[in-house]
Structures are given as C-alpha cells and as structure tokens.
Amino acid sequence: MRIAILLVLIAISATTETHLTAIKQLREKTRITPFSDYFYGMLELHQSSKLGEVVSIVQSMLDKLIAASGANEAEHSAQQANYEQQITKLENTLETTESELSSVNQQINDLTSDLSSLTQSLSFQGQQLLLLSSQITQLSDNHQEEVRVAEEKLNNNSRYLAAVKEVLRFLSDTLLGNVSLIERERAIEAAKQSLGDKHPISIMIQMTSQYDDNTIRRVITKLEGIAQNVQDRLDAINTSSTNSEQQYQTLRSQFETTYSNLDKDKQFNQRQATAKDNDLASAKRRQSELQELIQTSKELLDQTRIAQDNENTSYTSKRSHISEEISIVQSALDLLSQLPAQ
Image (cartoon, rainbow, N blue to C red):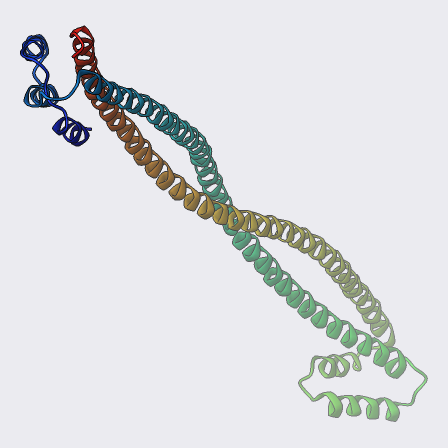
C-alpha cells in the first residue's frame, strides 16, 4: 500500500499554500507513525495536481484499505473457526483417550489381581497334587506289603495244614488201617526216604507208630482239631485279604478321583492364567499406545492454542495497523473535501 501511495503521489502536485497549511495542521493533530509521516510528506512534496484528481486517488486508497480490513476480518474469522474446530477435535480425542486409558488401567489392575490369585491357587493345587500323588504311592506300597504278608501267612499255614493232613492220612490209612506189620514198616520207611529222617512229619510218624491204636486215635483227634484251627486261620486270612483288597481299591479310587478332579481344576486355572497373561500383555501395549496418543494430543493441543494466540496477535496488530491507515487516509480525504476547488 505504501508503494502504491508513493507511485500515485509522485504524479500528484500539492495545491496552494493554503493546502500545505491545512496538511501541516492535520499532521500536528495526528499521531506520528511511519505511514502518517510518509503520507503527509508526499502530499506536501507534490503540489501541482488538481484537487479532484487527488481526492479521487485518496478515495481509491481508502476503499482499498477498507477492503483489506474486511478481508483481514474474514481471514481471521475463518482461521479462528478452523482453530476452534481443531481444538474441539483434539479435546474430544484427548477426553476419549483419557477415558479409555482409565478403563485400561483398571483392566490392568483387575488382571494383575486375578493373575496373583490364580498363581496362588496354582501353587496350592500343585502342592495338593504332589501330596495326593505321595499318598497314592504310599497307599500302594502299604497294600503291596499287606498282600506280601498275607500271602506269606497263607503259604505257611497252607503248608502246615497240608502237613497235618498228610500225618492224619498216614495215621488213619497206615497205622490204623487193615494192613500187615510188614506193610506198615514199609510205609514208614517210604515216608522217611521221601521226606528225610529229620522232617517233622517223618519224626512224628516214627514216634506215633510206636503207640497203640487208642493213643493213635487220640493223636488223630488232636491233629484234626489243629487242622481245623489252621483251616479257620486260612479262611480268616482269605476273608481279610478280600476285605483289604476291596478297601484298598475303594480308597485308591477315591484318591485317584480327587487327584483327577484337582488336576482338571489346575489345568483350567492354568488356561485361565495363560489367557489373562495374554490379555494383560495386550492391555499394557494398549496402555502404552494411549499414553503416547495422549502426549501427542496434548502437544498438538498446546501447539494449536499457541498458533491461535499468535494468529490473534497478528490479526490484532494488522487490524490496528489498517485501522490507523484508514484513519489517516480518511482524515486526509476529509481535509481535501474542505479545500476550495481549483
């Protein structure tokens, strides 16, 4: 605008001395600025143009300044609206992001608490499984020992019963049977050769063979009582073994069922822990993303507000400058309108 004024005023001559006096008076009433000093200086230097031409040129300048002021206002309004839109969008984004971050933080706290509980449960369940496994092993070992002892008792008593029955058979068939003395001696000798001289049955046969029939019958009666007692013991051992086996199988089944159920619970908790651990990792990644987004949004919001403030400052300065130039040109135009026509 100043270059335009210079080009216009070079072609303009100042008017009469009266004009110069009026311009000087106006200059004295106007605040000195680079533009006012320049503008009035140009009017004073060029004194040959006709008043109508000067008025027309000054009016054109005033119109351009007013148009520039309007354009400045429109540009300012548009930029402010754009800044406000950006700020609103950033504020909404920041509010939404902070709200989501709050939810994610709560989710992380909940998952951390859940994982802590699950870890404790898994540890306890692992200890219980080890204890149950040890108890099952101990139960099996005890049962095997009971079976071994029972079999040993069964075998011992069975051999004892067989021996007693053999003696009874020999006593009944050989010593009391309708056999000759020679056949009896042969049977005793055969038993000794078969069992050995020091075998208890051989010794008992040899001793008993020296008794009379009545004594042998009393021995047979006692031996039959002994055989019945041994048979009763064998029956009791078999019954006890059967009951023990049933109790063992029942107890072992209970232990194994408890172990199986606890192991299933532990596996379920392990799957839950794995899933929650994955969820926690995802939540922490999202937390990091949201924190970065919040930081970026805050920085953009600050930058946008600073840019808005800078634009306001620039607008205010430019508006003041244009208003001042309009005031100067308007004052000059008013002055020119008061001068007598040439």
